[in-house]
Length: 335
Image 1 (cartoon, rainbow, N blue to C red):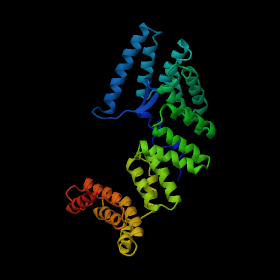
Image 2: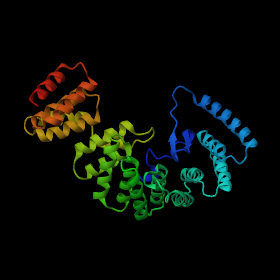
Image 3: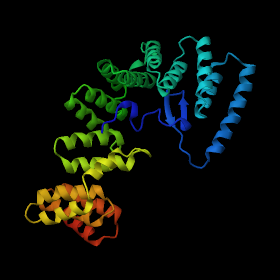
Image 4: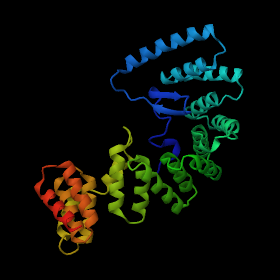
């Protein structure tokens, strides 16, 4: 099961109800519903819209007010109204980068990739020659979104060029590294795909789509235990409704069989037993038996660093476990 950028789990255009056009940085973000109900937020947005509309009636050419109104419409999920305000801004200021950004994001959300490409190229043309272009986060976003758009249009080489430009400004951007991994995957360049997945996971270790894709690579390479662990991380962090990583994990089970195999092989072949135990732990991270067995087998194969990490994981989930505390103390005393 492979994901494309168009169906990636953290794609900025997944949740219309929580859409927010953040003009200040030219991006889409999700509102987190904490402290306020959705109805309360909607009511507050409606009041803000009414106030802004009144203000604009008195100052119809005020770009700041219109951009703020577009942002508020976006927050309320009223994309047509947001687009209308952005269009008016462009009538007043032909190449306003904030309005172009907003329209580009809306076009992406609606799957109008041709229009989105045009907007992102206009943003780049408008701000790309600026004095601070090398550190302009708006430009990094524009290059990233142009790259994502080109991937959707199956133009992978130009997408890579655009995404590389984004990385020159934001080299630690996990989402851009992941987009590059997608482009290289579609071109069949597995080595470069893997490099960018590793970079994405270095900057965002729990990114569900990167963990999932990396798990698929490890599984294809025969590293079943590593794949299982990445599928577990992906499953634990995947948005609701995305069962792909959990499905991959289920295919590696059942848990009881993996745990039994680990115990059976523990004396005769601890390395093979460790693989089985790691898969078992990934299948059921709530199993204290599996977690302890992984730690013990790491010790048995002589990997004390991983053993320490495994015992520490046990104590995170079971802080009162005496055996884990004593084992970790003995290992750390050797250092």
